[in-house]
Picture 1 (tube, rainbow, N blue to C red):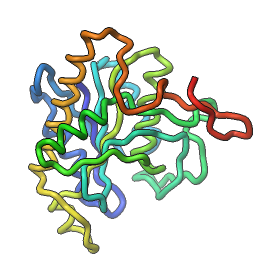
Picture 2 (cartoon, rainbow, N blue to C red):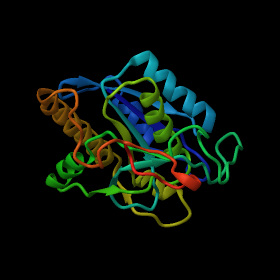
Picture 3 (tube, one colour):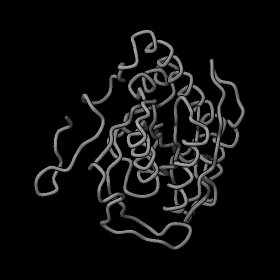
Length: 234
């Protein structure tokens, strides 16, 4: 099980996603063991690192974490789009209205069982929701590169992205008010999410390799249609 997070970036001197990924490294959860890695907030380096980790570790599942300061809940992302548009990264690189991969599909749906993961958190009174936008910055970029690499290499494993609210430490460091959680609660929510994923994997393995999570249309890539618009998955 691979769990990734990000280093601090822009005006965010603390990034709970990277802290949690580092804290989970080597931890046993359910029937699996976590490999936690912290990604740079740099477009090309982050994408290359994700692909290298997939090839080196060949994990059974991937949960990529990122910070969404301003959100109040744990957000399971449904889709990554083929678009880069946002602030500069930590190397000063900025993309605007650009494709991540000009030859790639318009979007990828997550292959994580996000409905089961969300329901598990809510059953434990942990605020959670499914989100239909991962943005157009590094979080969306990493989610797209992750799913695109798995698709190109023909590997069908659960993989996707989860956005975390700010931690109290980050909220104190910022000059503007943002909703925040205790760091321990963010870590616990991530652990419960991973455990829900592992439980789903154990159950779905008995139904065969074609089992798909109950959260997306059939097929998880959206191709470009005529005029570069979205086409239904085939």
